Image 1 (cartoon, rainbow, N blue to C red):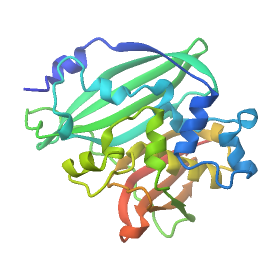
Image 2 (image 1 turned 135 degrees about the vertical axis):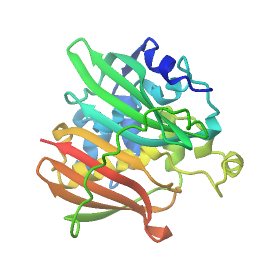
Image 3 (image 1 turned 120 degrees about the vertical axis):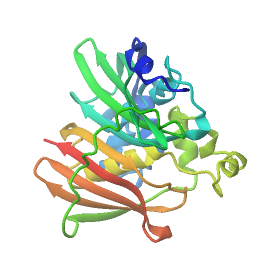
Image 4 (image 1 turned 135 degrees about the horizontal axis):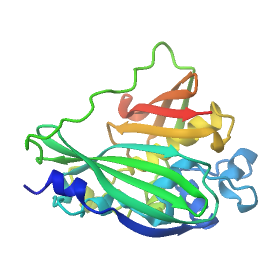
Length: 284
């Protein structure tokens, strides 16, 4: 089998040194659409180095490290990249992210699940600096056509669906050039920039990175329901359910609970087609 679940999970973790500074953080924020209006004090926290704070989802690109891609070449894993889908992403924050940092990133295949028509790889990355753990990231990667090997189907539990009308609903425009800017943070997949490549993948035009939508959603939650305080975020998870095209508008609905915000994200121009589901931000 192209995926040897036992070998993949038993493989030695891969450790890499990563580093970032204020320019990497600012570029990431700009890739999420930060800086509009440019002189808004709330936006200057994302764009001006003297006031800079770090949106926790920056962890997905810190050090330009595409840990997800690296995990697809782990021992026991041999897959066709055209069959790969990023199904979900979760972050646990152990403390606020510094504007400048040097750390060790340790990645491994934490689990391989058999979903019948697909296999699901859980790629776990743990990052720590000299002061201790910074964050833990879990990426769920669907590999179409690689299921049916008789393995564990994995946990079936999902966050409870939010009830009633949302506490807040906002819209966030996606600029025409946003994918071109976001990819400079490390995801060079031509699917997000090359029209010909996008057509080969079955899309009319390049699509936005799922992790860009992920970051935009967290920014919307922080800026509204969390008073702009990034340090309050303790965890953030979502399931990717649809695509976004640059130039579209995200509708972000939020339900606030005790210590958690549930969210649902849709594409306005396509009759609110689902984009992110099972989305939860845990906060203090």
